[in-house]
Image 1: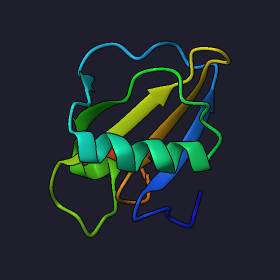
Image 2: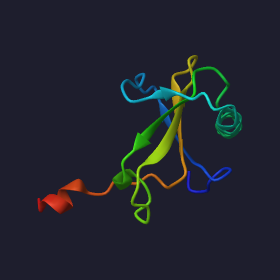
Image 3: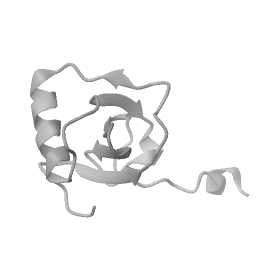
Image 4: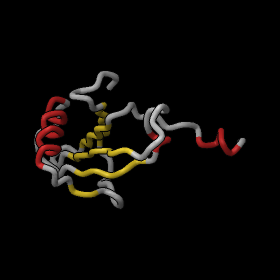
Length: 100
């Protein structure tokens, strides 16, 4: 998705395995309300648990040089996952720095 919803870019993945490691259950009530509304606008039916983790700077907008929050929910019934972040999701060519 190129146009953010309430300041978040949302990406959808179908039939992704359950993410393991690094994910924390989202407990902030304001964050839960905001992300629930955003994910529902994108088709989430409301089942599954909202989670977050920190991602390194090279996954986000090149103008940001800091770790940032990534929010995730996986719909139990159909296996669709949604990821919401404040920046466009990009992955730099990590081999460029290594000279390969």
